[in-house]
Length: 119
Image (cartoon, rainbow, N blue to C red):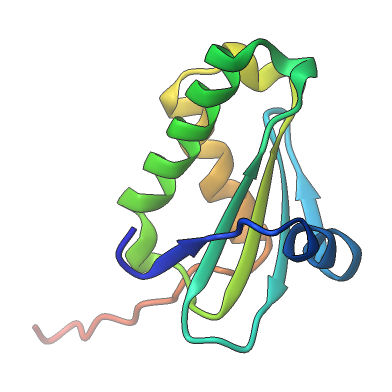
């Protein structure tokens, strides 16, 4: 990740869960909290309820790759925690990517670009 780091400490995850704002859809629950830094920190959580370690790691890779490819459109200075729902176990890349972008729009995390019509 170029502009981001990972959330690793349990205390950081708990802080985002307790003080952040959350939105959910069919595949994901996303918690977001401002971190007063110039970077985003991404945390991914998948419990054993969604599947074995192979399924959980596949989910984490899909979320990380979706975020990495769209990292340049996200506002900076956020702690983001993405939690898997049961239906995420069988979801493909397109579904996870769509859910991530949809929830990001609900959180108003996406930069707005204005284009000059003369160019």
